[in-house]
Each structure stands twice: as C-alpha cells, then as structure tokens.
Length: 336
Image (cartoon, rainbow, N blue to C red; front, side):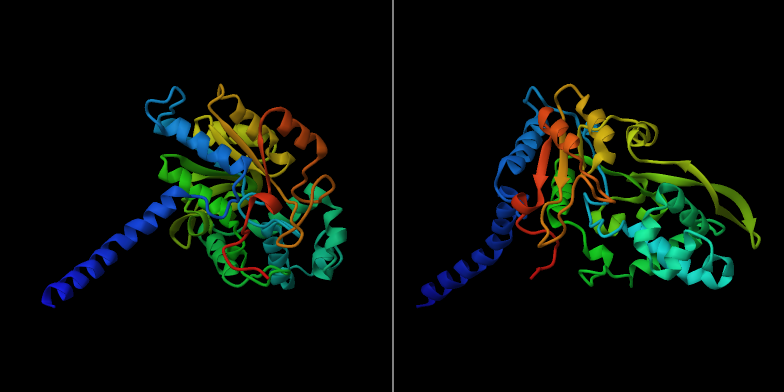
C-alpha cells in the first residue's frame, strides 16, 4: 500500500515537471499557431530553417539576419485612417482654443467640423500642415508624454478597443519566432519615428533604437535652465516608398534578408530586400477580410494595394498573405 502511494506521488510529481516542457515542445512544433497551414506559413518556416541551420548552404550568420517590417497595416490596424492621423486630429481639437483662426482655416476647419472626407482631399500637403502644427514647438520629452497618455485612452471607432490592442497576433508571433532564431527585427514605416517609439516595445518587443520612420528636425536648447531637444516644424526625413530603402541603408546599415509590408509604399523596401542574392524572404499582407478586419486594395485612401503590386509580387516570388485565408485569428482578443 505504501509502495502504491509512493508510486502515485512520484507519477504526480513527474507530471508536474514534464508539463511545462510538453507545452514548450508544442510551441516549438508550431511557432506560428495563428497562421493556417498553407503555402505562406510553409514558406516562412522553410526559409527560417534553411538560413539558420549551420550546415545548410544557405546559412546566414546572425549578424546579417536583419528583418524589416512596415507598421501600419502590417503590424496593426490602419483603417479607417492611420492611427497617427487620428492622434493628429485629436491634438488639433485639444489645442484649438489657442488658435481661433483654425475655425476658418483649412485643413484645420475640416478637422474641427469632423469632415474627414473633405480632410483627406488635402492630401500629403494638408497632413504635413496638421503634423507641423501639432508635433512641433515642444520638447521631445513633452511630446513622448502626450503620445503615451493618448494611447492609454484613445479607442478605435469600430472595435471600441485601445489602438495598442489592435496589433495582428499572427505578425506578433512571427516577430517572436524570428528573434528566437537570431534575427534582429526593425520597424521601417512612413509613420513618425517619435510617435511609434512610444509603443513599439510594449506592442512588438521592438526597442526604440530599432524603429526607422519619418522624422522632424530637432534643436538643442536650454529650456528652464535644463538641456533639452525641441521639436521643429521642418521635416528631416520622409520614410516611405524609395525612402524606406534609403532609410534602411542610412539608419540600419545592413541590407535586410526578410521584409514584410502591405501596400505600394512598401514596394521599394521589398525590392531592396530581394536584391540579397536569393537568401531572402519578401511578404505582403493583403487585407481581404471585411468580417474580422477590413477588405481594401487598389482604390483605398490608405494602404493602397494596386493590381500591379499584386502582379509584381506574384511574378517575383513574393509571398502574399491573405488575411482571410492564412490567419485563423487576427487580433489577440476573441472576435464575434
């Protein structure tokens, strides 16, 4: 009887010890559980195995395992408008009492009137006017605090959740998987560098120094007897289209071997990556799931995915992710 009791106790203890390792083994067997089995998932796993196996002819040293990701529409939601643009509009409203002229001056008037459709007609020039007015004339520390506080309360109009909850779970898994295999993951985005750095480490595990984005000028000043950096209204660098390849070269200094985007603005980044002599992976997220997220493509105001981009991707062996077919879950929380 005593022997049976001791045996049962031993088995129970063994089960407790083995359970964590079994769970780890399951995770190792499928590091991308939110991805459906299919051509894209297989291509990712095969590529990573091929370039991280030391006796493989395609082995890539860790120092050269550079992976770059667009942000809006690739790592988190970008509809109905870019998240940073929502922040800009909220800032216009928050400080409009200091600028009575905005009531009649465009594009500020459209923001205050809530006329987003008209606001978008002002294009890049209008966006720059809004960004200049809301992102300059303060210290970098003050701006970081404003963004961080906004992210704690601002919610998406459709999903009614914080924007930091609207990251794509399959892409977060991919980031974790790549880092576990010795890749360094970078964000390369047309969004503002300072804005993104407020949340990228929290959301993606990507530290601020691995974020390449559009940047404004700053100036060193003594502010209240303390050394500060003040944000100026002038643009330093625009990180979109060809600027993404240029930004990678300027700020990272190594050519990526793995890159993911979702729109025509990412084409040059993927082409630059494809120049790595066959030891590369290029991916595009195609938003075709109106039920769980959004479906948009050639005529979208944001995240435009024209027919020629799809044709170019397929002709050159790039991997196009169907959000509807390739992902069994979009966000980290359950959706109806």
